[in-house]
Image 1: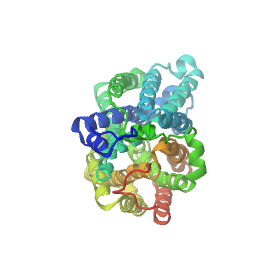
Image 2 (image 1 turned 90 degrees about the vertical axis):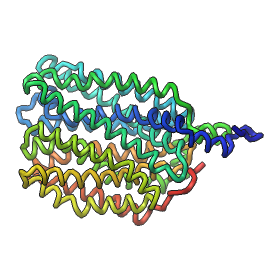
Image 3 (image 1 turned 120 degrees about the vertical axis):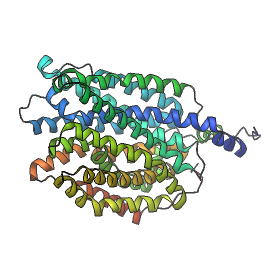
Length: 443
């Protein structure tokens, strides 16, 4: 390897580090495994929401108990900005790998303890209190994980494959959700309804500790990113990255916030809320809801690397804009078809369209978030725009959707929220978004 006289990492060294197959494979695995655990937890909470609502809340009205469980679900999102700021600062000062190591430990422990909390019938009001505390810890962990994960992968990539490499962060989300959905499906078939209700659902949360252990091992055995090491050697790190973001990157922060609004609403309605919507709102069997959601996630998982490649080929902006516009135009007719048919082929076709639209939006938006901020403040900047938007709009999406159905009596009412959010993302990209593909990351 060639090293410059000043001690900087040379272009040759960075290219070699990025292009080495072993290096990029280890980077993708280490960066993505924690992400899979984070979303495995979020997924199984959404998948088992109807059971959790009856176990931890005393309301005699099923829809009210379900809304309460989604409120607690949203509490975790409130802590995401806190986790993002804490771990984002740590990642920008100490390194991406160090931050990712701590986030996976915190998530593994808090996920495991959700499965250990006694029910409301056993310990009364302490059941929802302990559940809320676990959700707060999970929110802190996730807030730090996502920005560090995206930055970690982007900083190992080149300008010509960055969309593809960063898309594996979304792929890992699908893997986590798929594991949760598949586990939920398996448990629902293997156990009786009473067994699933009383103790079977806890197995899903306990199993998270094994993912955490594997993730911790992989992250301990991977190098820091070339971009961050170069920033350290060039002495360009900021003492207070957050202050630097607020002082010099206001427009980019606003852009990231607007971009995430539609992205997070669509993600949580399509990828996590759908089993509850199918089973509780449309009154299909829970097993069908799990099975259809598993199919949706598989389609998304297959599509996301290709949408990342598409963003590398034609640009981030058109991929984001046209997918957001697709949600605006198609959400109502798709939900209408979902709510009026009993034909399984129609149900699968609707979910296929939703999965492809979401994969397109994620394929463009994920890498775009890493490219509008420089290396020395990237994680802190993402913590502000991304996590605040997710806390305000993504974490509340299941609750708001359930409330809309309850308030209007219409099973189509969740589309109003989905259409409004994706319309905001479309307009923000039209008027504020600038193309970033095939350019080096900002220093």
